[in-house]
Image (cartoon, rainbow, N blue to C red; front, side, top):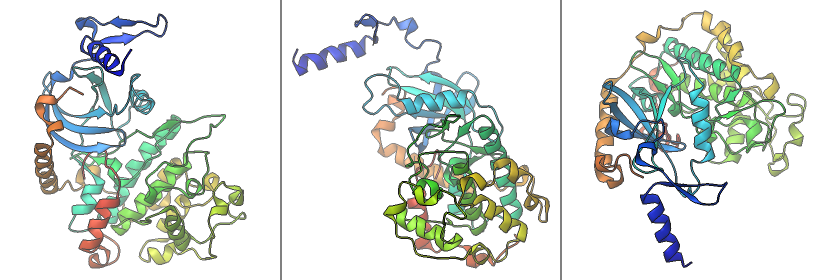
Length: 403
């Protein structure tokens, strides 16, 4: 059969909605009433605008016409997929369907479009993400507000880790916030279940600025400790109002970590010299921990919390449970109530107008095609320059939705 005949047959098969049986080796035609199975059609939703892009899909703000609620619709990427849903998408669906926690974004259902390649995750809609807030806020979060955010993050992480799930891509753009100040962990495209025996996994996960040192040195053993390192980077970023370790390459990332924490060795990190990528780097000796120099205004308890999150040895790194019970959250200033967190609707409106303009430029996003394929240093010392702000926005990594 020629390539033309093969393509024509494939198109005819797609048009009449058929599935290939691995048992009989033949195509099975799907009747229209059974085409979507038990899933609702995406035509039940009115698309309002595109709001961002996650690790494995584009996200839209939409209205459920059945109940008139605003939701987030994440269209799964099916690039080059010939044999169904990509395994990364199946993992995300499977993980999210089994999670229910106030600090984890909720997957409500899965809906489908006109073709078998159009699959959407219906998720609760959150009005903003921390990355866009940090980029647009006129002044940093107060320490009380930072504590409120981090407590919610640690509660969400404690729930995930208690259910044997590692997120593997924590960063400020993947932390969403509702108008009532509730923080939610989002974008589970890289999340994995873990257990015993541990299976080797790729170290090329987690956005570079938030990547744990064991991953930078090539470890294929992933534990909940990689999420805790990322949480430490987020805490530092919220306190300093700028990315804490903004490396441009893996080598520079390692150098920034060593400059802040000192050079690791087998004494403080057993097995360090046996990591796969250890011999690829020539490490300069830097014996000092400079966290106190980085945060001269932070209390001793705050420095201890950061040190716990930034332990080189993953086995000694603080857990989410440890952090929830940490003295830092019990001293003045106390964490504020989530309902008193700032919402900055003016920035959301500005972002929404820009997104609507972008949507109009892209025919693929047209509505017609939908469903088809403080306490602290002076504020001036914390605020980055305009040039730094532009660099931060460019390099934060793909947001789940927002920014």
